[in-house]
Picture 1 (tube, one colour):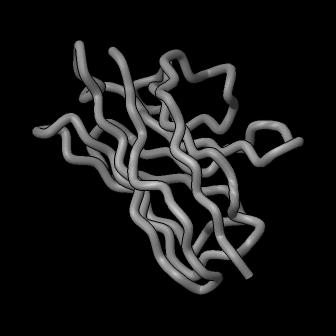
Picture 2 (cartoon, rainbow, N blue to C red):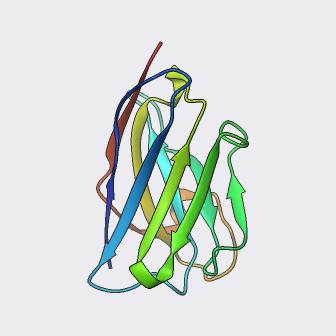
Picture 3 (cartoon, rainbow, N blue to C red):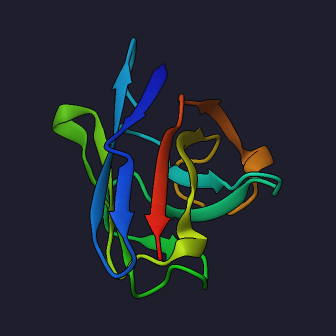
Length: 124
């Protein structure tokens, strides 16, 4: 399955943005999917993950309460709603498919298929 993230752009601090992740060439309906981000000069960072049914979510402390992950299995889509954005949220955001169907891992090594990322820039 190939993933493609979209929806990035330039936003002012305090603003909101919604990212989308589309799957093609297959389905990710039966696995956990997640979001990661990588800022310039920094390591890839876990953002959040959602279980296959879209019921359970798990977020990094840095985004908890500000970001919300959702999925629409009928459309093979996942979303990341970001609000109260901060300059430190600036990064390339990527979506990925986990090796697990239920376990909400935060380890990048547990994610198999990575999509092309989308750049989010938050200005102060």
